[in-house]
View 1 (cartoon, rainbow, N blue to C red):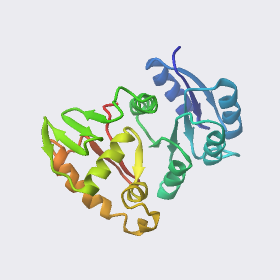
View 2 (cartoon, rainbow, N blue to C red):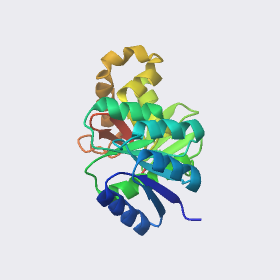
View 3 (tube, one colour):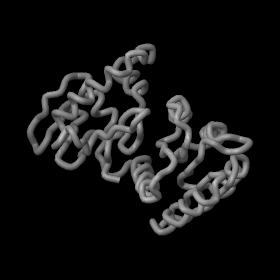
Length: 229
């Protein structure tokens, strides 16, 4: 059966735009205009993915996200017009899978929905082998190859690459990446060190490091591994 998408947003124009493009993309769509109605629709309709605005009247999007996560691991994409980085990070920490900042391209929304659904369902990747174009990551062998040739990566670079690749399509904050490679969230004050490691990693894996296609920057939050979605 065609995937069902729940769109929760209090702006009718945005809801209609999202519905039109998602339906053109082959999805079924239900919608709600506030948090309480959205949560009720989630429980009644059991959607395959939720597109959730953060700034909702009454019960806001963070509360809705928190409530959904107590009941389900359904993928959630946040919509936000807020510029504060902390709002995005809180949403991701609560369990949202991705976010889009308003105003957004409806085509981007459809692409993100498709990519998140593919990622959470496991895609076609082997648990020990991840491929992205000419790049191949051998998790068991602890090595990476480009066009069949080994890439010499430092431990941190390999950890960053595998962490991002295992969460393909999902935006990971600098704090999340630091916790993975250092095992201590307390080093978050040095989060810009991640940027230097990413620059070095891009020089080794990207065809054009100045126009990265594999590891994409999500400004104000962190980085995302492109799965071609």
